[in-house]
Image (tube, rainbow, N blue to C red; front, side, top):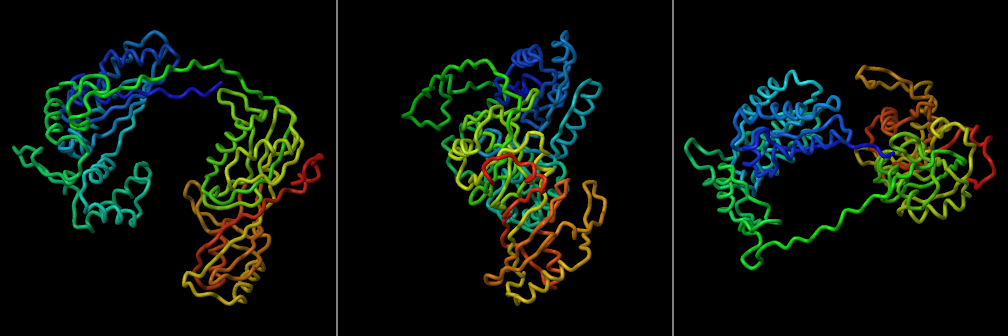
Length: 510
């Protein structure tokens, strides 16, 4: 009943010669045996990971990637179509390795990408993902930079760099790094390059003063062995290669024999029938506010399993516990009265469930109560009516405003017939919405220093839309005539539609 994961092989290079250069320790027959076994076990799509720009690589090695894919397809015929997902990465040298002297050309990487793209055309059931050369240039610059790199990293961050490996932000990230490198008085090619005819291994490197235990001369010798396609055995299982890490007194590695692989017990399909539905109210405070919504769901799933509660699971290939948490909280926001619904395969008294589940939960997740609700009642998301927030706002100037200013602003916002809000939809199209129906009440509760404390009652519509704190911040700032910043956020309580109260069965009150 578990979800089948993907299967990935990493031959790295398209020819045996190049795999020997990088000391991969994988033969064509090893690769074929693995792919064929996966194919015979039912996988119809196999992922392969390759790199281009490796030391000693020729165009024949690049074209060998396409030949390897075609060869694997031919050898695995007979059991239906076989598809491949290829990931083609660009090699970037790393410090303290035999290839640390390798020099990478972005233009050559682009040329090889085009060459491989052409060679892969016509292969059916093939999906190819390439790493943008600009991403590799950034990785190489950071990976082999000297101490001047610190101001570049800070500058790139200030320019908006972040999540740079995601394709949506490559252009923005590249521009941010480009500006930071220029501002530091550097350029992309500032890593020291060997002149024509010069031995690159004689050049000083920014990290030469760092001792990892591996002798620099051994790295030079290993690079020479690699260029001659000499395979160096793994010293964990073969003779010592005298790299210098172990020192003269350590000798050959002593490898611990791995424990036997446990035999899995027969998989039992979890119960999918439902006999009881319980609604719990809980807090999410302290360090628990650093849990994202998905992390919270995973935590609750594990806690329920640890408590050995008879949960009801969804049907299908990947059964999940029937668990629903009401209206996700943003990361870093605390909640004092959150809600979740559980569906069970056996009847469990609410008090018994709390006593079993609470010890499995971390500090900050405190169960406040539980009650039984009808199985056929609407989902928790459909029953949510509103929430009460406690929000802190501080003027950007840091100067406290008079209490009457805050009270007047709250009154003006509540008296406004509409609160227009301009933004964009998911497709980037401009739109205007009225936020006034989402604001139920707004009360000033005093100040602590320059920070004002407000109680905010908001509505939650059937689609889950509600008034966001940053929207209220902008609305209040407009009425106060001064910029604001949010200092504290705490969702004090979630309210359910009166229908949920009318349909309650006897149980522990929330």
